[in-house]
Length: 481
Ligand SMILES: Cc1ncc(COP(=O)(O)O)c(C=O)c1O
Image 1 (cartoon, rainbow, N blue to C red):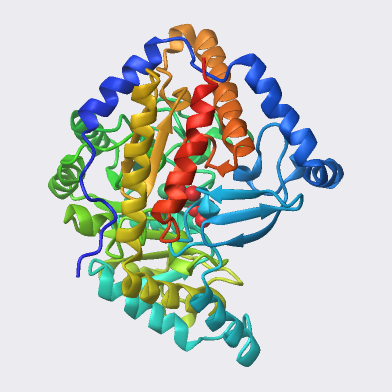
Image 2: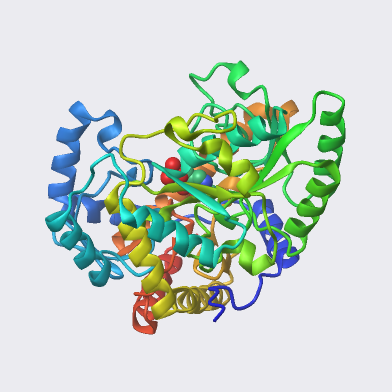
């Protein structure tokens, strides 16, 4: 049975029209007096977190190890995760729409998978460095759901899998250029910290990375098939393009949503120019559906990048799959018959990662988790839209199934203008701060989002959980300017 989390594809024209309108208006952030109260909440109710993070700041840069944990006014320390909820060390409970950044489609710490992993550790070991049956079982499971994946190699993270994809595409095509969409995130490798968040920003965030490392990375404006066509044509005169890599729902997990027909047009262009198409399904595999966004759009990429759900919410979540003739370049050890694209990783494809991925995929299929999480995403988006309309706020809520977006300040929608770069940078900073304040307000009301504008739903998000969340969002919106 086809189990996708998307029931209706979003009307991207309407979303962009409303986002443009949002960007024309002054920021509708939290009112200053309400913000003061929200900040007091953290001092009053999150004292243990504050104390621990203050200590951590001495030893850990910024006080936390994970980018998504940098919350305003200070990070909170989580003690327990279960289903749709998180608890911090001060005993506050939160509705969890971060969901660890996406991998926990079944809800946090899902019992049937956890029991299997505990059994595995007790009876085998977390890691041996040699082959385990689960690697084969996981590869078979992925091949069954994602037919474009004729061969699969597991890696330590999505970042590593993107690196492997670029490397093997370059080796197999004997070309160098890799084109990405502006604003898309493909991990933090030297070559991919390019055009992050906002299209056109190129090396803005590439501090510490020599320019030469991104010499062969290019970005094109999302949804503009003409721009991609032009880029591919120009590259032909300069040695050609190895691959086009896309987040198939659009940059930043669909924050900038892709028009319904765009991926198909990209596939056609890649075919015309004899260029590999890479789908980065780190977020979408197992979230849009078990056949990924490619199953939803009915498109066959040459390579697919995996992460997150592929290890079922356990560590070591990365993998690359695709056409046999390309993937054979990734043969490990001495078996390489072809020239080898070198990849590795001490803990890659550990029994824990492989078994957790294998059991999670089976559970997602058995429980129809994508459909359930998508239903929760639809309910939340419809509810948020109602709250927004009732209060006449300029905010925009939209979702691609189990990926929900709530744009209140549009920090990633600032238009780049190199002639006015100072004022553009100032605007980005102001909007980022307003978004952090929004995130803090949500958290004070007991909701954890991803960076104040994205929410991942899971199977654990029942109607009751979503309705409770909507009441909390309503309180935040009542405090908006
Ligand atoms: C689309 C996409 N690609 C790649 C990555 C990098 O994956 P990882 O964080 O496992 O390195 C991410 C991470 O969020 C992602 O969203």
